[in-house]
Length: 382
Image: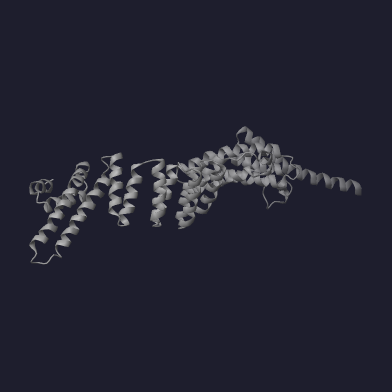
């Protein structure tokens, strides 16, 4: 009788075990037939940590695999349980893998995770396009974590650089700048959109007020991709922000040698103007006009230089002794010469952009100083 009693007890224990595993199998069958409600009900019973009956099924890898499959269905009905079904699926598969010590389910879990990568990617792109950048980062990072899992170790030669890059973009927009730097450094090293990766990484550094690392990042990028206009422009811009004028001029010279673009001449002219070297500034503004004769910035800057020289001549005239009328008139005549040189540039600017108030006021002042009253009346009446 004693042996019989032990046998009966063992049967009861086994029945309880199989009963709970049966809930998992039923959940899988219901899911396959499209009955999500009943599938969810069964898997909740099997994963109920407060129930003694689930003590076995809750530690069975297959339980969490099926739970992952249910949440991966991403049905609207699941929204009553979680706002993020795919993350529930992700966490369920992770738990299944942790419990699958003998790799009994590794092949089927790899299939599950491969399908989950596709679902996560679609949702991450949707989140990104909807400006839900934090959610996009989370999903892109889940994809990267999946690729690091043991079931993918045989595929370690494959690195999804596009996902790393997208993760960096999402992090940058989510203002998770440290993450953005981390991911863009990876893509630049892996050769995926490296030029853009250097630029985005530098922008992330600038957002955390680390201009020096931003500058070093761009210099590193430029040392490899010297013909990339984007890196060059960002590099020059940050040098200007740091007021490193001499170094900015050095890089501008290299930029002009590779690509004689009008903006480079304009920037170089501005730098020389700030340094008080008006002659070089004039030369570079004129170079810009040889490339683009109607560039309004070059025209206006030249006009302003000559206009200001005329104003200085008036100031000099004010220092002439009162009784020296000849010397005074000479200085005034010189001022009119400079204003005369300024006039065609400012007139051209007004012709190109009649709505610009600053240009219009400068032109009115020139007409007054040159006593061109008919022209003054015309522009004043516009």
